[in-house]
Image: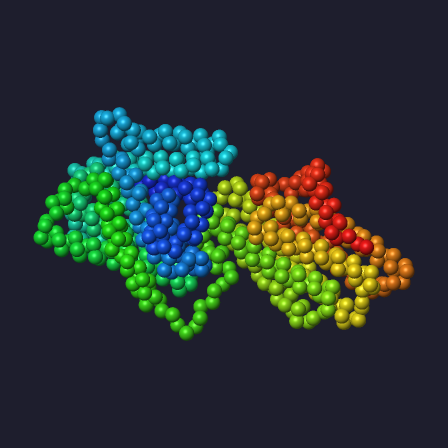
Length: 585
């Protein structure tokens, strides 16, 4: 083998691994986080969990990615440890689809239709379609599909290049002697484990093994233990990702390891014991790409069938390895913002949106209590609770902001990138609303400490004003929770009514000052309160518009608001309705 063959082999391997990575990313983006949501919700039944794990892994082409995702689910409390067992087993089955795709490279026939199934025949067509989609299509789904096609074409080109580069090794005795060494089950097992642990992909390591088949120097006896080791080596990714996670998350990674170790041990003991008596003839035959795919699939299916009834045993083994102690492990409110989800940006974004919903609900609670203090009786305990809620909202803003900035660095669709930008603005609006709840509580304290009182007419106006604020805050919170766009479109008309109320109340206060019905000192406090109310309404409007923009895919806030106010009869109708509901006597 010359230096040029070696360089070709390295280049082919690079193309192969890069193509696998590109195809996996494209498939993940095309799924838009839907596969992960399915996993999250439909894993209560063990058999269903296995099928889902297999299906998701077959689509995203990576058992490691699926298992890391499961570790994240368990860490964030979305999935129980018992539910994770079936998904992990299914992931091992799903990953075998790659070996079947790669086995197509070995097809040889003069039949035209069979030749069409050969990757060298259809990969160029997929590459051409893919590059057209990527360069000329604006639709995100088609661009993602283009990335999948190109990734697959590069993957297959790398496979063909590797196969061509190693073919001359068939005539090199030293190469044959090295491979013969791996015929020993233990050495083959170690070789497969180490190779897969290094490249962190069993699909890739199986592909490399399939490429070496063209030398005819690898027998099934050599390939079988290497394949067994590859299943163990792929556990490294999940084990690494579980570092620093909760106990159950680390246990999920251990279940993945124990499943493969126990399955491999049982398979090899039974297989080689039978071989002592039967002497399987195929072990001495030269391995083929299709044969390796058969072994890979057979092992994973059999291991799942045998060990699925013993899922509880695997779970118990993991719990015995990582034991509970007297110290109760605290569950963080922010476990949904798990860095493991960042590898699936669409799903990570959805998790961030759910945490933002909780942040909005906490802010709403603080605001409603603050309104009670303004129009009711001041209570020091309530003020302290409002301040505690505001601190909590600040913490949410910090955690969410950090997570969203991390997420923005990943490869995102244009729509998801815009959603992140809007979400960053939204958490800023929520945080500032929470600040206003503290300001309102302090205004209520000032009224109480100084013995100030609203005049009767001012008190009635503030009751109406506060009711309008309760309405807009509750609507906005509900919009965030339900993504009800129809409800979101009612927030801006109500905000306009609140602006009018603010102006009218300030004007009425000036009249009361002239008539001696109100004091200047109370006027300062009233001005602070009404300003807070108006700004809270403004932030509610921003949040509602953000939800409308995300839904419609339009991201110019100013243009949207101007358009609504200028030509919407529905806007005018809604505004008139709110004006009648919140009318000052």
